[in-house]
Image (cartoon, rainbow, N blue to C red; front, side):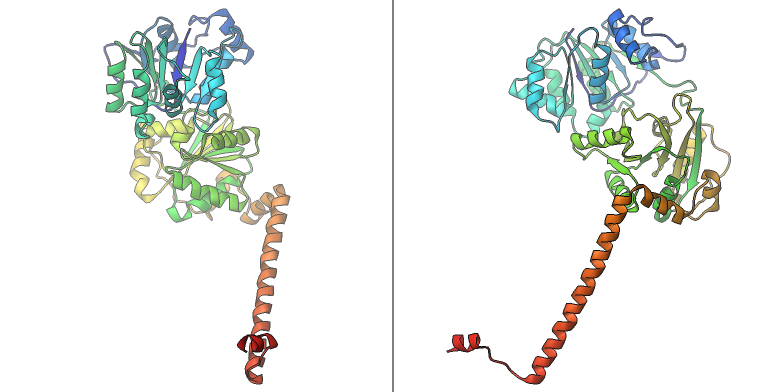
Length: 441
């Protein structure tokens, strides 16, 4: 089977004459959905038995050759998952993404990988130089089309689709569907079935997640964040910012304070994002500051806290963010900062999720409420703990400070000495050097 997956960003369902929903789905196994014995063996090896709701809806239709429109995932994660699922069947997968050398990718393509997972720009690069051929493609999966639209990749996507045969199966997965993406789906799909997977109750949140909303002044948000990161009960934390600049400002401040934090946003090269995620998964970093786009589809499990530094734009974004904590029966904490101009949005989110009622409390970094809720240490105790966990960094910082102080003293001494010499010269009158006399003639 020749399957090419075009991964990158999203698409969500709208009403259609052909539609499915998770409202009546019950827990089923991959065997129930028609997966082959070799695939079942590969999945069992990594402890995967039950599909997600979207998989329950899509797999029977996909195996029947139906064109689909549903939800989303990320390129490298998809490639890794396909490789695991197809291990016993000997399925080879080529991951074609930007930010990596093309040479090894060309080797993978020339060896005839039956499954190709790639991002639009790099796939187009291979198409243009002839290392990728799509004329025999049988299945096309387009992922995260709405984000491709936002990032300006839609023309690249259409160029790639134009290189594929008309008689192919097309599946599109994502979370939202702008008009331009709907038009794309209609142009390139044949009577597609729209599949809509939502938690029970349409926007159900994780029951084990403890949720807090705090009114926080924008000028005090960073200090409140630092206090929350000092909570002794917290483990790994995801902090969501609305913009890339916001991520960079927050990361700079956290690193300067001694927190083990990493950044994730769309302007970072792929290799940097992968390095940050590896460090986060291995525990070398325990705070990840990211934008929604960068975090979409990432497999970030085991978070103890999610902090919405900027209020999410709507209830769906909120659920998507906080759904990364409180997983697998573990308790989690979701905290949302609300500025005065974000209060209406926060109220709508709480209303949609059945959380409205009590007023949102106003807090500052010095508020006793935070200490009581999260058992916070004093600022001095927290700083000492961070310094103790990074003795080498603390020592280097102290040495640099001492060196800077010493340099300043030396500079001041030089300035004082020079000033005294100039004063003595003025009192003694003009002086003539031998070298100056010789040049003067």
